[in-house]
Length: 131
Image (cartoon, rainbow, N blue to C red; front, side):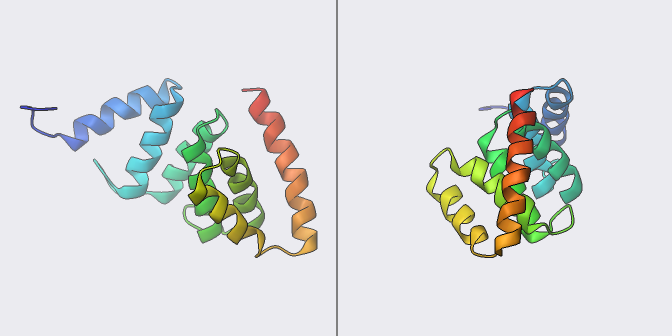
């Protein structure tokens, strides 16, 4: 805030506390802090963990970040199918960057992978409904 010194470590702790308590927007923010190394060390695997928690709770940016991470193999083994499925879910927001990312990832899949993505999409959608 204005007139207050920035303290990234204190901010990290506050966001972490809110994320641990289950607050989905804070889970996304914590994922971003880990991804960028703000207030601590970069940790792509930890970022992925927090993005997943909030993605299942409907945070579109987390769904997008998961799609990007799985596509790049950042924080987890590269997985074209998981990447595509999370980008499908994120693109439902009609955000142009998410739609473009989904379409780019779709072009990387063969017919069998497209069929597998439909199964995974159903599974994830079912889990999201039960959150």
